[in-house]
Amino acid sequence: MADVHAALGGAGLRNVHVREYVRHWAELTGAAQIEVISASDDARLIGEALAEGEILPAGEGRYYSRSYVKDTARSEERTVVATSNPADKGVYNNWRPAGEMRPLLEERMRGASAGKTMYVVPYLMAPVGSPLERYAAGVELTDCRTVALHIIRMARVGVHYIDNLADQNSFVRAVHVTGDLEKLGQGTPSDQRYFVTIADERTILHFGSSYGGNALLGKIAHGLRQAAYDGWASGEFLAEQFMLIGIADKLTGKRYHVCGGFPSASGKTNLAMMLAPDALAGRYRVDFYGDDIAWLRADPDDGKIYAINPEFGVFGVAKDTSEITNPAALASVAPGTGTLFTNVAYNSHTQEVWWEGRTPAPPADVAGWRDWTGTLISERPAEDADAPWAHPNSRFTTALANVPNVAPDFDDPRGVPIDAIIFGGRTRDREPLIRAITDLAEGVYDGLTLGAEATFAAEGVEGLLRYDPMSMRPFMSYPEGAYAAHWLKVIGSAASQPIFAHVNWFRRDPGDGHYLWPGYRDNLRPLLWLLRLKEGEVRGRQTPVGIIPAKDELDLDGIAATPEELETILSIDTPRWKQEIKHREQHLEQFAGLPEEIWQAHRRVAAALHRAD
Ligand code: OXD
Ligand code: MN
Image (spheres, rainbow, N blue to C red):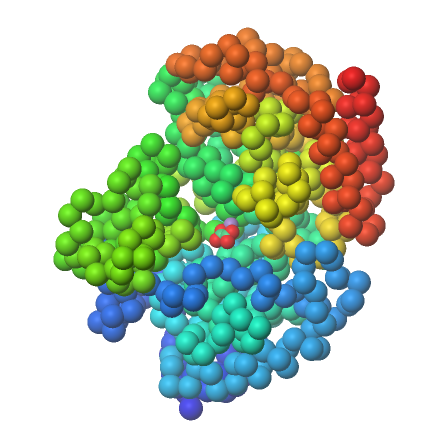
C-alpha cells in the first residue's frame, strides 16, 4: 500500500481536501506508489518513459507512442453524464443517475491499479488569474505515465495551482484508471469501459482507455462537459468546442477576435492555425489562441463577450497536416518542441514519423518504417498493403507556445473580446461561403442546426445533415433546451454583442464536383468581410438566411476563382434550403423546453424562404 501522506507531504501538497481525495482513490485502486507531478518533472518522466519503452525517440526532443490497437478514439456510446437530478437528462448527454454510476465505476476501478504508480497531476484549465479560475482547477489521478506526459503539454500543471485555491475544495476530481486493455471487450456487447462525468459532484471517473480525451481528463471531460455544466449551473459562462483566433489589421492597428465551432473534419484546426494569404500578409496578421475549446463570459466592465482558451496545448489530428494545409502545425511539432506523436507511422532506424497527407506519397524507401500498429511496412500481409500507415485519428501533442503564430497575449487572464462567432459545416450544395447573422436568436438557432453531411449516403436520407449543435453533440452535459436558453442569456447580457456567421469552405461544382473555394489561408477573406460588415464598412446582400457578401466586397486579390464559381459560392439554393428547413424542424422538436425565441427565429427564416419563391 502506498504511503499517501508521505508522498503528498514530500511534494509540499497541503490542501487537505486534495489529500483526502487522493487517499480515497489510492486505497480503492490499490496503487503501489503515489507520485505528485509538476511541469518541471517532464524531463525526468520522459527519461523514465523512454527507459521503459513506453515512448520512443522521434528525433531531437520529440517522442512517439502507440496506443493499444483497440484504444484509438473516443467512444460516445460509453460516455455518460451523471447527476442526481433526472431533469438533467438531455437528448445527447446520455444521462444516468449518479447513484447508479458511482458504484459501477468504483467496482471497475477497485484494485485495478495494483502494482502501478498513481500520478497525482494538479492542473489548471485557464490562464492564471482568470475570472473563471474557480471553475478551472482539477487534480487528475492517473495510473499511466504517458497520460501524465500528455497532461503536462495540454494543461498548466503544478502543485501551486491547487494549494492556493480560495475555496480549497473547489477542484474537479478526475480519476483515470487504465484497466487491462486487452480484456475490456472494446466495441463488443460486453464492453467494460466507462467514461463518466458526475457533473453535479464535479467528479470525473474514466475507466478503460489511455487514449486522448478518454484519458486527458482536463480536456474534454473537464474543459467541455464539466465546464459547460458549471457554466450553466452558475449562470456565468459557456464552455464550447470552439477554435479562437485573432486578426490584426496592421494598417489601422485594430485587433479582432473570432471564435467558432465546426463538426469534426470541417477544418477547425487548420482555420485556427491559419496564416494570412501572401497577397494580404502585408496588412493582416492572424494570431492563434486555441484550436479546440473556448470559455465565454460577458464582462460587466465593458459589456463585451470575452473568451479564453482553457488549454495549454494542442492535441491535433495528424492526418492531412502538411506544408499546404497547415504549415504552423508542422512548425509547432518541429525538433526540440517536446512533441508527443501518437499512432502515426514511425521509422525505427531513422526515428522519423509520417502520416497520410504529410507528403503526397509515403516514403519510397520503406526500410525501418512501421505502421501505427508497429508492423514493419515491408512485412505487412498482402491484404493490408493499402491500409493507411498512420491511424486516421493519430495525433500530435504540443504546447501552445510552440505554435509560431501564437498570440502574444494568449496567456492574458482576462481573455480576449469576441467580435464574431462562426459556425462552419461541410455542405456541398446549399451553404454559401459565408452568411452573416445579426440577430442573437437567429445566431443561436444557426448554431443549434449546425451539421455536416453524412459521409456515406447509406448513413442517412439524401441531403440530410448529421446535426451537431454548436459542434457540442458529444460533449453536451445538460438538456439542449436549457443550453439554448443559457446561450441567449450569456450573450444577451452583453451590451456589445458579437456578430454571428455561418461559413462553408466545401461548396462543390454541381457538374464535376470540384471544390469552388481554395480554402485554407484564403478563408481569412470571408472573415475580413464579416468584420467589415460589423464595422458598417460594407452592406452585403440580404437573403432569407442571412447577409451574403456582394461580389465586389470580398478582397479577392490573388484568388483564381472564375466569375461563375464566385456566383455559386455567393448564392443560396432556395429549393434545397426549403428541404433543409423541414429537417431542422424535426431536429429541434427533439429538444424539450427550447426557448420560444429559437422557434420564432426558425419560423422567421422559414417564412422568408417561403416568400423567396
Ligand atoms: C476531440 C478532440 O475528440 O479534440 O474532439 O480530441
Ligand atoms: Mn475537439
